[in-house]
Length: 147
Ligand SMILES: *[C@@H]1O[C@H](CO)[C@@H](O)[C@H](O)[C@H]1NC(C)=O
Image 1 (cartoon, rainbow, N blue to C red):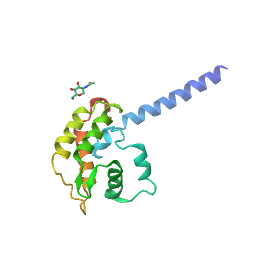
Image 2 (tube, rainbow, N blue to C red):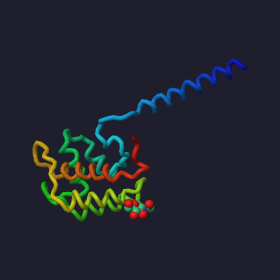
Image 3 (spheres, rainbow, N blue to C red):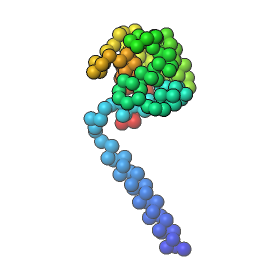
Image 4 (cartoon, protein in one colour):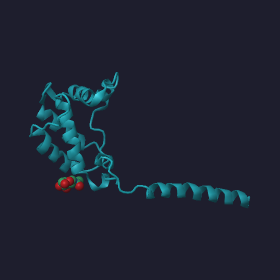
């Protein structure tokens, strides 16, 4: 019985030691900073599902599909500013973290300005989405910063 107890204690120590070792390894890194900010999913489940079956490949097409399904584009190259902003503001209330400042920055940097990311071909959805991700990282709430 005592041996069994000792065995259990050793197992627990090994497992928790392993967990600690993992934490220690998380040192400085040059992985894109977006990996550090735990941004919740911005899209609506039903539109994501539509665009996953089949899922278009590449950096433009899948984002474009999701933007189109949400009605964020009035045409291929024009953002529906009101709709995109309204989506983010209502999204805020149903997700963890205080993203108020991040969304204000999105409106300032990505909605009110006609930003380009210079993908190989023009892709408005990609331009806006990448800008949005950067604004979210810049204004990542402390409680969502994981690095
Ligand atoms: C969220 O952040 C904004 C701006 O950073 C701040 O004004 C507001 O008080 C915060 N809200 C909560 C609920 O913490």
